[in-house]
Image (cartoon, rainbow, N blue to C red; front, side, top):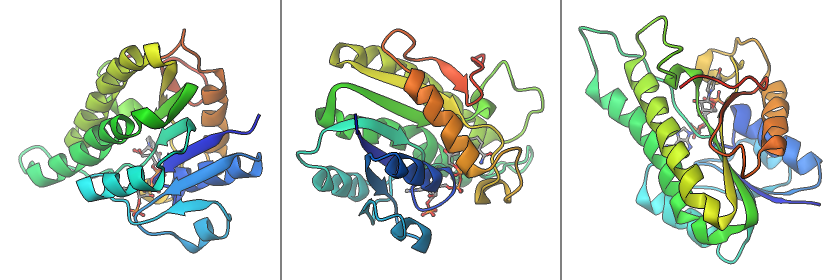
Length: 221
Ligand SMILES: NC(=O)c1ccc[n+]([C@@H]2O[C@H](COP(=O)([O-])OP(=O)(O)OC[C@H]3O[C@@H](n4cnc5c(N)ncnc54)[C@H](OP(=O)(O)O)[C@@H]3O)[C@@H](O)[C@H]2O)c1
């Protein structure tokens, strides 16, 4: 059955690959971005442009564009990575990451609650860098803090959305060769999207709220 899929951060990286993958398999894709790239335009999907997920106007624009549309799958993928060094902590990059990586996915999901089909799925693209147990190297304060916050918010979403039959996947993509990490990773954005889509396929109300690596491994909090 074809599905309606909404993807944030769809103009490049993993979000672009998700848009391509879901549209090629015959689904209706709403690709959400601040500014559409030529690569995204070439996919021929529905594009909702001018959406900065950290701004109220952006979220309002998204809600207006999706009015009356039932969503089978929402993928909160947009994110940023900055760096902070102990001794020179930059509070503004920490706040930026918190707003983009933690708060925005929560607010986007909340804003679209009335759009979810029954049943539906919501995926958040987090990072294992938000795992407390997995933090063996330190640093990256804002990114780690924001992804840990996203993880716990997503577990709350899994509980709160269960009565609405919306299951929630908390997904680490792997080390993916996108602009975020300078283009060199263990896997390509297309491979990441394919693996993540498999995890989303396996998502249900029983395993909702699990923190998965895209390779299927369950990650520690
Ligand atoms: N690459 C990796 O190895 C890796 C590992 C773990 C987790 N992740 C996560 O995977 C997700 C996708 O990352 P990626 O690797 O594909 O990175 P990317 O190539 O840098 O893409 C990031 C996407 O997020 C969008 N975005 C950032 N801030 C936004 C905002 N305020 N409003 C709307 N869109 C915004 C960007 O849009 P603009 O073009 O407008 O900036 C872009 O489309 C992120 O959540 C990231 O944390 C990636």
